[in-house]
Length: 190
Image (cartoon, rainbow, N blue to C red; front, side):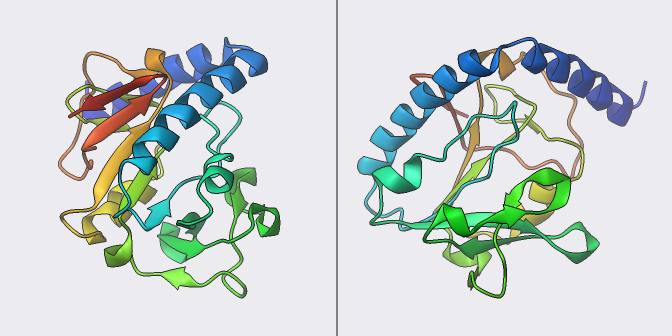
């Protein structure tokens, strides 16, 4: 079986598992993840530009982080032409609008583009992760194409619920690895 077929099987299983959790359960878990991340951000004043994501209903919501750390620059992803990903400075999440896949995105007319090499911390969503830093995304390859353009010293962190950390993912050469994982009350160095 090809790696792409195995990855699609993982995606199908993990999506079913995520949907089996109630919205309240995932919200409580998201709050725990946000608290852990907030503590980590406090310990790293050098992280000035932080890229986060607008969560799908089954992803950890990090919407409270910018409110807890208004001294940082918060960047949100925008899916562009040719399935490219760019990040834009957003000072107020209320100015985001629904874009691709129904996800809240910045408007490039009012939210300035931030160059990849200026981002200090990139918080990445995913379907599943391994403790060794492998990431299984939704299947569009957006982050896999974007991450090679960030600085080598930028922190790339997967954000997930504990049950999304699995023993193995069959990765391919283009799949980008995480440096660390943030989950409920835990940080896993990869």
